[in-house]
Amino acid sequence: MKIVHTSDWHVGRRWKGIQRLDELEAVLDHLAAFIEEQAIDLVLHTGDVFESRNPPAEAEQLVNRFLVRVGRSGAHMLVIAGNHDDPLRLDARSLLTELVNVQIIGRPRPASRGGTRTLETRSGEKAVVAALPFASPGAWVSALDLAGEEASARTQYARMFELAVQDLCGAFRPAAINLLMAHTHLEGALFGESERRVHIGEDWAASPEALPSTASYIALGHIHRPQKIEGPVPAYYAGSLLQMDFGEAGEEKTFVVVTASPGKPADIEHVPYEGGIPLVDLRATLAELEETADKYRTGWLRVTVPLTERDPDLNRKVRELLPNALVVRAELPEAEERPDIRLETGVPPVKHYASYHLRAHQQAADLAVLDTFQDLYDQASGED
Image (cartoon, rainbow, N blue to C red):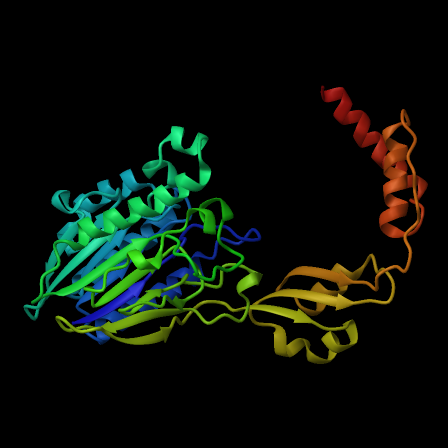
């Protein structure tokens, strides 16, 4: 059985004022074409289809087109909700997508209530898929537990994940291709800078020891960096569809192609996504940028410029050379000794600002700047 594992699309995410829907459409077109051309039997999506619980209509339309196209290709598809998705809305969407062989599981549920699905491909092969959507700590750990022994609550969370996996994987069959898919954070996984720490941390991580040794493949979502989780069977985070921010600049984004047979660990291949605009973290002087600007006029740039002194016109100079520079940063030598400024109590706010300006910029603020600060302060005070 040929399987594609994809994850963490975050469709509808606005970043630096850019919607990125055109990029997403190009990448999803490449992914759908691969599924069609390679006659993929099963597609697994391990959560965070959307960036938010109420995505814009354009984002929903883009996702719906992909789901219909994959269904019409003859492949089956199974999608679980991530922490960014609305589980109830995804469950409702499944009522329609099942007409094109795309099943969606929004809320965690036991195997007896549809948490484990059996799928038969066009070639007659059967897959048993244990599907575990995102479950927040509050879903498995009571408020009383959270208010009491915190370490015990974390242990209970990991234990509940383990029990859920045991229940879902109890339906595995020796003659079928057994798969587990989950949207969670496992201990030891390396996360990037784009994940929201509120949902990710060692404090609320499940243990890799809870993963079943009876699965042919374990598909994971939630972490944006593609990576393998060590264990008795192949287990992978597919990672995000695009480089999500400059913390992921230069990171290759891939989907996982799995070739599986009953009772055997799967063969794994990683295929790079095509169509996304790369993020580039560039450090160069203005002179170097002038010489090499043509080389960097593709992609989204974060440009760091080393300076010997402040240049208030730096943003304009860089963006004239590189209109695709989204972030421009000055790198100044550290001051040997900052002024020692002591503020007296009861001084007006404008004097506090003047002291801050001297401390931060090593020079006194212009009178025009101080007048502007005072005007803004007066306006804000008047609104109260």
